[in-house]
View 1: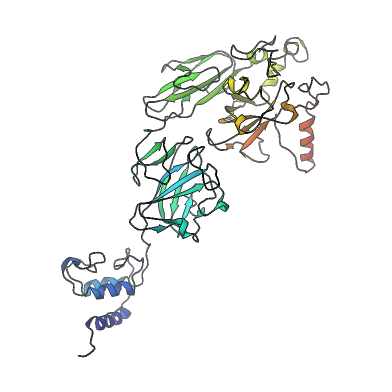
View 2 (view 1 turned 45 degrees about the vertical axis):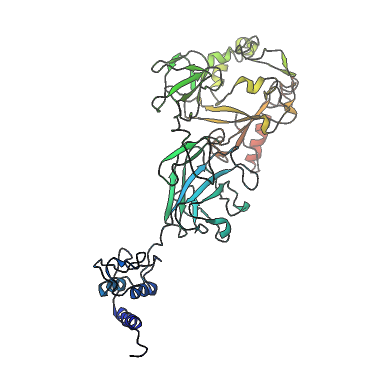
Length: 525
């Protein structure tokens, strides 16, 4: 018959039959021959094109319409397509992997603004290019839509087959489409990549403590095994393994605090085969500095002591050093009564380093002879919390590099690492955090002042990027990037021995502003 087309006629018959069919619910999209996420006319055309094809779909291996598997494309296969007609399912999941990241980038690679920020590398393990625009990145898997990758910059967000895309986790999305609005926590958290529907998880990683300028990535690419890389490879294939793991932080049997009687501290490390090193002089323990801890034996503490310990293992990254300060109030009261230096490594009292004079100890005229205070000083020391700053003495007193004896200097080059502990006299939990230490203030930096103020800065290069603690109790913030330890300077003993000491006036004035409902500076002694 002229103009007669078997397949077109078949298509008309099948469509007519399908209009009479009652679509049933299906758990899977059987019949989605072109993997579009929907069973529709495109799939029916594929079936028509293969009608009565022979076994194994030899001519159509990529979109075989033999759904029943009876070696022929026929009405049985059409029945399955009819059953799921216009049903939709999840789109194909792209083969994308969070392949490598760095949560504390100090000097490894800078971004387009010249800043050394956290970064996340996404790897396309598939055989086709993928535009990740419209997808979501998050540092909280329970908040999958935290940040959406902009979908209007395909030239910047398309990842070629087996290629990489670097995204900056700097908390500054206004700097470009590849800058997310959060930063990565160096102490550990989670990273998730979600599809553009905001619910389909494409890949994720939950990580622990990280180390500055050391990346954490899969090996080999897209694999489920994660390793630390001393030579990070942002935007490149992960090759080689630099470290087998990260040694855990040591654990102390006795916590920091105030004590009266001597005791022993045992130190352990959860990482099997690690070697513990410790110091008692404030310096950071390393494989070359400090003393070996003998497992099972205690470190005797019989006076005010700053105990620091770290653990080490061959081919492993060393973990964080932990610091515990044990304070004996009787020691504090009797410290350096005649101006003696606290230890052999300290500068001599009364001598000058770059014009800076040292003044140590408690005044014996007050703690020993004045009847108004002689029985009150020990109790007074236990009425307010204590901050303990523990750092290498050279960080403070080295003539060339010490910040205390070069107090007029400022800026990042005059920042030194320190341990900061808050020790509550009632035994309640305080904290310990590593931080950057600087001198703060203006005229109070002058060398004729024997007491300077400090500023503490919390950065991921030292450990945690923020201090999370209610320093001012129920007032104001409980998360801090930096805090000041301020010594009173104007009209005080620290200012040329001025007799008009402000004592409590400064804080009293600030608290009075609060009481009047005005803005005020929060403070605590």
